[in-house]
Structures are given as C-alpha cells and as structure tokens.
Length: 165
Figure (cartoon, rainbow, N blue to C red):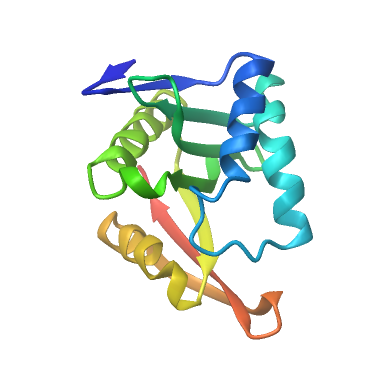
C-alpha cells in the first residue's frame, strides 16, 4: 500500500526478510543498541517467521526502496484473539513524520479483520524508551505490570495492555 511517499507492505519474500534484518541491525533503527542475546536472535529470525505466517510483519520503504520502518505482532499461544506487539521501529531520519502512525494504522486494520480482543506490548523502563512509552499511553494502552531486571540488571520490562473490543 502506498501511503504518502512511503510504501507499507506485509513481508512476503526472503529478499525482503534479509533487508529487514539488515535494517534492524543497522545504526538507523534502535536508540538503545545494547541488545540482549535474545534480541539479536529476534532481529535475525522474526522476518523469516513472518514468511511462515507464525507472526504478522509490516515494513515501510521510502521512494528509493530503502527499509525505513517495521512493525510486527503475533497472536498469543491461546489463539483466542489476544495479540502481542513485539516491535515498532522507525529509521532515525524518518521519525516525527507520521510513519509510525501509518504502520500502527495498518496493524489496527489487520487486527480488526482478525477480531482481535486485545493487544499486549512491552518496553524497557530506561530513558531511551521514553518516546515509545509515551506512544503507548497516547494510544490507549495501560501499564499493567513490571518485571524487574528483565533485560539486564537494573533494566525492568514494562508491560502494557489495550482492550480492542
């Protein structure tokens, strides 16, 4: 789907998956690049899991075909309409231009077709994650939990929930 000057698509090829992995591991994706070993595995595997339809994955390209953003969710293991929102990542140079909002809009439209009941997401409590926490709160999510020292010692996981229906 072409939105403004950006193209947002669901991942469908191994070539796209490889380009997304490169983006996720680039200097242009995350503010905090002190990745956990598990995050590195996620970044390398999630796009390929989407090809197997184990998760749902969108990516955004600029007019030159460069990956500039991604968004991914998965239905939880109960398969009763609950979804987990894993990553929303926008290239540093494309922040504050509405790209995250476009990716989120695509996600919510998809969740509606899936009759999703709720969406759970999470982030870290460090200052580097202030913007994503603010986005969650502006988007109607409620902080429902904290797991101390989840990522590393002194880095808690914050858990957010939003009822969809």
